[in-house]
Image 1: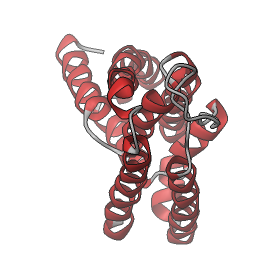
Image 2: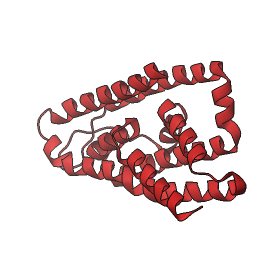
Image 3: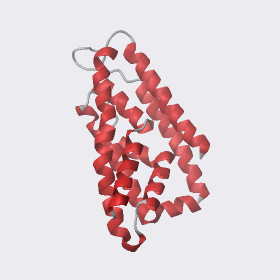
Length: 201
């Protein structure tokens, strides 16, 4: 991969990873409710799910998706159902920590986070863009491998920022009914962010 292409890829990866979106709303909510350590499986699940998707798209699955409208429609319905479930899970979360009370609650698991990427049309679109734009047909396998490694190098710290931001909000949101309002707001934001993508698709 040429240096110019690698730099462009790093910039794309940063913008895609740090900008607000469904996965980052999940991370923010998890950081608030469960702290950073218990959000680590969610961070790795989101990143691993997306990078696995990039690999699968890179070896041909993206072509199947774009040429099979029925499969894409099924993906949209699966996405809608899964996002509603995740929003419900967030809205019902009640967990800040031993000092400030508000238990119980369980963070989203690695598997749940990875599966979320596979029913996320926005993630599929990003995977298609990145594999088409930043791979070299003359040396495809090597460039796809480098692409995934560079994307991971940017993606993991960038999305971790959202969980850390949630950690810094824990003290403020642990008072009164603020956590209840925050979790409900995050659930609504998650539904809204995905509904825009689903209606566009």
